[in-house]
Image 1 (spheres, rainbow, N blue to C red):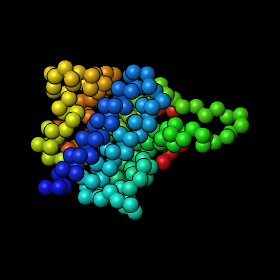
Image 2: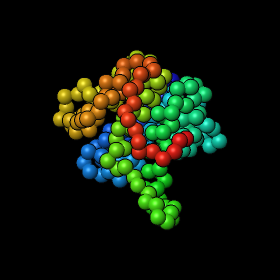
Image 3: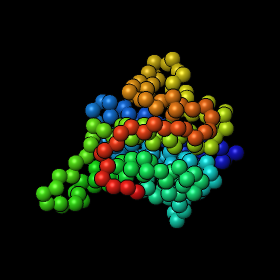
Length: 198
């Protein structure tokens, strides 16, 4: 009984982080939003790994905060995790985790401006979530219990802010809000904000 609970737990926390990331972004907290976005993606990647039987413990492939390394571990189960669009977006969001959380350690590069695209981090987040979330191995009953599924179908006043944060300007919401495990076909947007690959 613990295994389904662990899979659902990772997804529950990831869903809440994802909604929080979008809420921060839309309310103007655009420095904190990508840090939370990194946290969300980390949880979705770990949720995928746990759903494939990985243990999250020191020394395992599922351990740590590096999105690119976690994605490589996921590629052991699904080669699509090695795709260029995913790697570029993970690298882009990886910058924020390090540089925004530790601004005193920014590299001193004379004559070069380190530019973060704070107005452009929500799109790659949505694309990665639409790619990873539906691949998490859950049964149909568990999908119906997920936070995103529940929020989108709720009429409670207390859920309205979550629903709006989740749905506003989200071209991928119908892919993200799935009812069964499957591989999604993502039409990735034009993306020119990254500086490197995983």
